Length: 291
Image 1 (cartoon, helix red, strand yellow):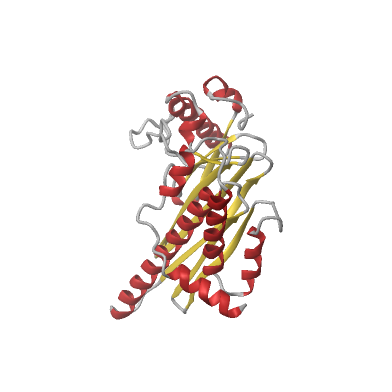
Image 2: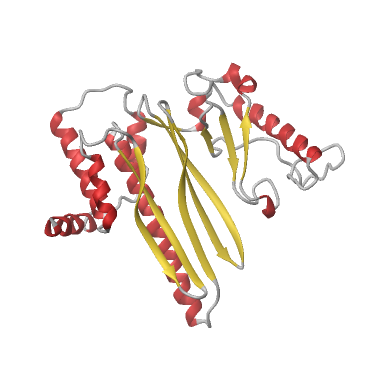
């Protein structure tokens, strides 16, 4: 068994990660909701997924990789299969790589898992390079911490948040979300949920109102949005971006998220706003996911 695992690891190491990491994901997005695949194709993709998962971890958790074998466990899982770590007095890295298992859409599963590994390996390589440079120049302080959080996991939706905290003097925090429509086995983006681009303005106006209401209720909260008392042009939040970060919560509500410093001072950290469904009801493509 040990020899087999070593062989699989070697196979995986020799397979280059594609330059365009989203290729497989985009390909899966364009696929029809329902399609027939040959057993030979499915077996090939499943085998590739198996090599991928076993290859990225040879520790005790490798046993969990066998949860992807058809018939062993059909529940979609998000697991940690690899961790890059450095623990020195002034240099600290704790980088956890998530892996999704048991999606029916094996192309999507494999594409996301490749992306997660490549993103985190790139972060670790950059950390190591910067650490070596700082040591040569006389030392310093450097830290990076990544991980993931399953925000929603129900019959319809799987939403995974992946955070990155970089520390060089002060810290910065970013969060990326992937939201999967389990029934149709597709990765969702924000424009897919709406009839047209009006959602950016409609949601932006609602968030502006929420910001102002929160600041009135709690003087410790500050957002960069214009108010009657402060019309400074620097406080100019109006609309969200077309591809704004989001997830769908367990109540079927759309949640819009912002990274640290995006719309508020750093002490506010990551901020998010639950959008009342009645606000966007008329511009939704359907109410199957957002209710």
